Length: 216
Image 1 (cartoon, helix red, strand yellow):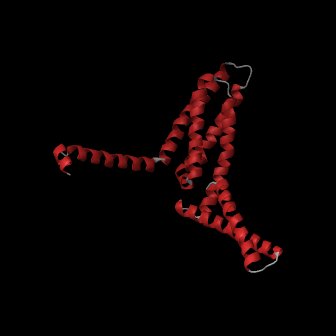
Image 2 (spheres, helix red, strand yellow):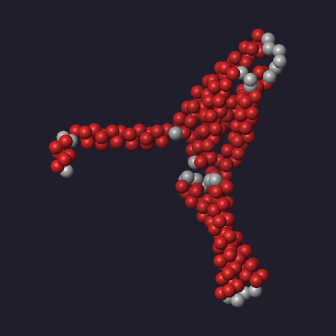
Image 3 (spheres, one colour):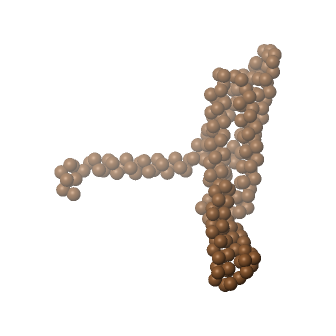
């Protein structure tokens, strides 16, 4: 749920409703200015929090989540944001041009998984292995890679460690790609089904002779 958009909608509904209640109390029921202001403030508060509660309930129903599950997911996504920021900082600090493409691809996949989980929280459960295992490995290796590559003097052993870290990050990129594909599995199945239906319809349409189509 987009918190900024929710607050904007709540405020956009609460302010005119508050003004309406104030006007109703002041002009319609002959209340004093301050009493009308109090009623208007209370009315705006009811609208603000009521709409927020309604929107949150709708959001949870749409994503088939309980409040407990949603809080659990939000907490883990917040922790993941910290890890992703550390990964981004580490990967951008490495001055190795040849590995840049692989580093950017890894970061793109990681951010895509996070975006999907933020937009549709229920998908988080399909990416638990990513969040509780693979993300930590990427963070640790990225920071190790950044540290080793920043050393001014590089001997054979250090070069070997750098190459080994690069290769491991490449392997992790493939694993994270599988994590993302697993999250999208149902969407891909649905898309393939729709494609098969469309192809079948086109095939049936093409099998009808031109004369028959003209008669119709």
